[in-house]
Image (cartoon, rainbow, N blue to C red):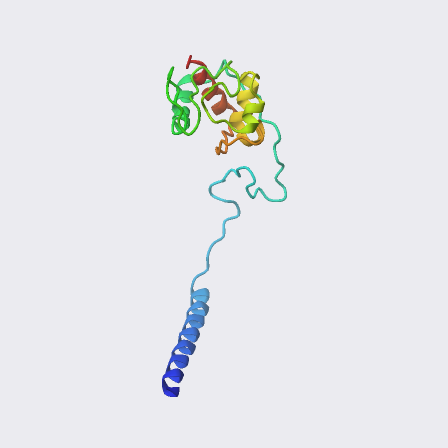
Length: 169
């Protein structure tokens, strides 16, 4: 039994030495070239590591719905369609039906189980400013919302989606 233990211990010791030797040799043979700047910039999302120099934006940029691209809005809204429907009388999905949402009131569907935060907003209008803020960051637009969407960061994209939503009435 002692002989078997010695063989196992020797095998582990040899494996460790080989691994260390392979690491040493690979560092001598391969010299990686580190880029001065990332090849692709990744936009940090809510709470994402923007680093110490990053300043957290508290309000969205203003938008121009009148000059927005309707076709782009329709295309971007396909992401929304995974949780929302837009047809008159259409069903609620994970999120409520959004038919007539622009100019309508918050928590407009009586049979949908809105979060308490959204219910507290009932009666307020979904005007361009409210939609801009909510689409920019749902968690900041209506703190406490159940909507688990990170938001649309580009103002021209938010404007395009709002312009398309406005046609859904």
